[in-house]
Image (cartoon, protein in one colour):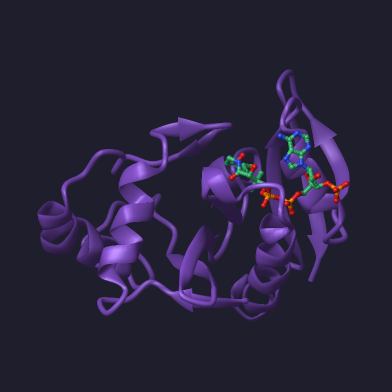
Length: 166
Ligand SMILES: CC(C)(COP(=O)(O)OP(=O)(O)OC[C@H]1O[C@@H](n2cnc3c(N)ncnc32)[C@H](O)[C@@H]1OP(=O)(O)O)[C@@H](O)C(=O)NCCC(=O)NCCS
């Protein structure tokens, strides 16, 4: 299994994944649900690639890198790394967001994908620990985090806040 950064060559597979990903699943948001391939290639893909080195973005916008998890020729998941925290991220979504293709879940991809993402994030993230947030009812994602060395450091009404040492 490998993680490949978002790129132009993989546009079709990335589009298939992005357009099928729900607009909001367990707090992971995707404004591009249902986007056409044409729109993805013209607008969405260049925009997502640019998020790593943002230009003309509002002050609150944190650089974000998109990676896709591949098993052979199959794109099975997406992992996003936000490079540093703001107050909103510290008390919210944290550094990393991820999802696995619905029909591929329960095969260990989430756990391995987060492991590979952490290896990259350790070289990017500014803080001493990787911050993550998970819904209290999202048992699968909690297991993915805990199996990658996370500990629970806080909670609110509907989430646990987790951290993984860098
Ligand atoms: C969370 C998610 C990424 C997990 O991916 P995955 O590839 O299914 O994860 P894994 O196969 O590595 O499974 C991790 C653990 O969760 C368990 N699990 C998987 N699906 C489950 C489910 N629906 N209910 C309960 N446990 C589940 C697995 O059995 C495994 O536990 P085990 O190691 O004790 O056997 C995936 O379900 C997903 O994309 N969900 C929607 C988006 C999302 O919730 N993102 C995370 C936001 S914090």
